[in-house]
Length: 555
Ligand code: SRM
Ligand code: SF4
Image (cartoon, rainbow, N blue to C red; front, side):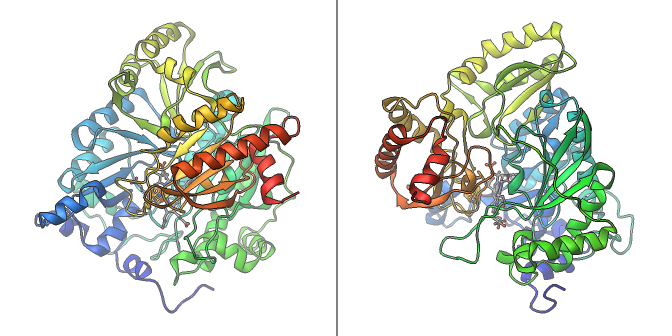
């Protein structure tokens, strides 16, 4: 079993937390600081929040001998990334009242708000609660937001699979009512702590992510999840899921014991047994995962330590049934189907491009106002994608023209249609100014860098290529840079490792090609690589496949 001795500090905090309550109530009442106690900082994550500080203002505040400008980030639990128009309206106002105002669509299909002062955390959570939204288990050592293929047009079975994502999310929620007691002053119903058969008193060794893909689209990037499920549909019927376990993209510069990894195939499970199998994949990680070194605690390391076959056998033993051989499936794309499309019921969908998921009004692009206007019609649902985009969905034929007019008036259609393919295939993580782990900019810089790369693409006549480019401000991989065709990984302010060779569909990791390049070296290097690519590529060969063959495998 797992390391019993030498538990990490976080393990001890979890055990002593009385169902994740810790001293959060006391921390919130402490008016001397905008922060909370250190042990509570670990616990607040399980409630979907991070304590952060504005890194742009650190120096100035320190000069004035002030504490850092502390504020909270709140992440919603939103399985499958679905919101009603009423919820979007509520979110819009909560963002305006309590946060920086920017609504951030994340790479896991949910929403984050930043810059929420300690005194505003309870009103924010309460306001979400009145809209039937919560942030429970959006972060922390638990099963996180369950992602699910976002475009219902892909399959008439989308609704069934989406409901399964919701079921997984609810099934794996921690049993503690601490969330309601801390944030909404709910009465304490139990004297001790609640029994929690899944999480017990130590929760999981580390975060745990589940995602469900519906072939032929891999928009959820299924192989990066601790547990990725691939829906197997035969003759128009959902039969079950292929289970891929042990994905994860984070690593630490200079620490070879940490690495990005794509999920290994455990096998196929009929849909009737899928919930049980999912549950036991998690309990095996709970019991065998590393509890002393958090850098080795994700499922990917447990599986590599035990071996895939042993891990599978352990899960089978717990399930009382075996995985069948994985069934055939094919992914043909990973991007969002931008623009209008209609599903099998005749309902309309508009997938719009939102650069790096940042919903904000700019002088010449009133995106946030436009989306509020759409929501106010009550005629479109909001579905977030794992590519940080938004699908306005379930629009009746008779309402399409009115929605289209709003989208036109607010430049939304124009932005989606005129952005270049590279931009529309790009993604960046939050990084500065809120992420405490960022070594370099990401979402605030990638748009500018792409503007400088676009002329190079034109020069080599590659402007119509769907090259997937992703940037992260550190090697944790939040913007999934390790499986992009071109991945930029921040090393220090203004410098990035350049990775190439990921495939377009998310089934192969990229490899570091150059260390710590500044902008001019990035542009110079890409110019060179694009030149060779256009000269030597085989017909139909993607940039990622070519890079792997030419520069990584060195064929
Ligand atoms: Fe992430 C930590 C943002 C998706 C791997 N991630 C963080 C924190 C909370 C920083 C921290 O621990 O203090 C970042 C908060 C920044 C901020 O200011 O908001 C952060 N991660 C994000 C988001 C918002 C990026 C985005 O711009 O969309 C994504 C939120 C997803 C969500 O809604 O739940 C986000 N993070 C990811 C992904 C991609 C995915 O899951 O599809 C990964 C890679 C996959 C994986 O999990 O391996 C990812 N985040 C990490 C890691 C590395 C974990 C590891 O075990 O290697 C960390 C650091 C950690 O956990 O210690 C991290
Ligand atoms: Fe922060 Fe690094 Fe994640 Fe970017 S990849 S959000 S810099 S932890």
